[in-house]
Amino acid sequence: MEMNAAVACLSRRCHAQSEILTIDPTMNDSYSTAEETADNVAYTAEKEAAKHKLEGAKKHVSHIAEEAKEAARDLGSAAKIGASALRDASRSRVYSARDLASDRALSARDDLESRVRREPVKYMGIALGTGFVLGWLFRG
Image (tube, rainbow, N blue to C red; front, side, top):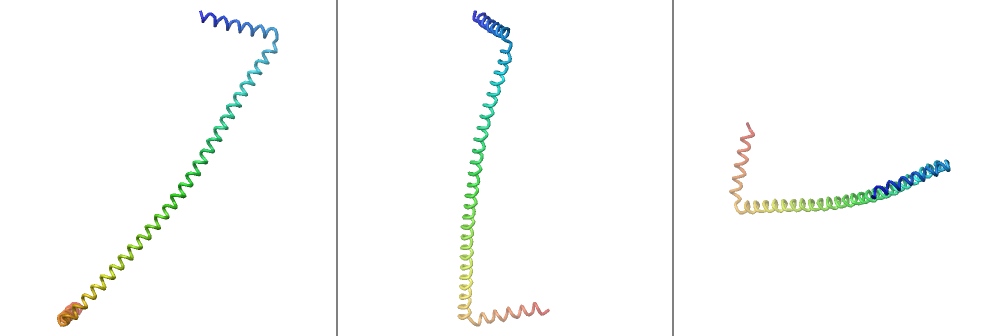
């Protein structure tokens, strides 16, 4: 039943449109012009919406690029600070190792000096024996 009512309505509409066109043939041109205008308005609206979305995307990408630049700048600063701290720590360790080696060398020298003072004959014999062996090796 509903199907028949829809067909009847469509039939009446087509009949009414054809009657209008037979009464006034210029109405067909007006109808086409109205359709074209509606299509143009819809196209312009879609185009404006696309432009608006594109502008929003450009702003978003620009904002992200600025954040990336700032993050890279911060990372560079942090790396510079870290490298400076590492350099200072390394310098401190080198100085500590140098001081420790110097202290041990002085201690060994002082220890050897005190031994030589306590037993001069023993160390004189060691020196003479070492000189004799070296002379014999390099002599020949």
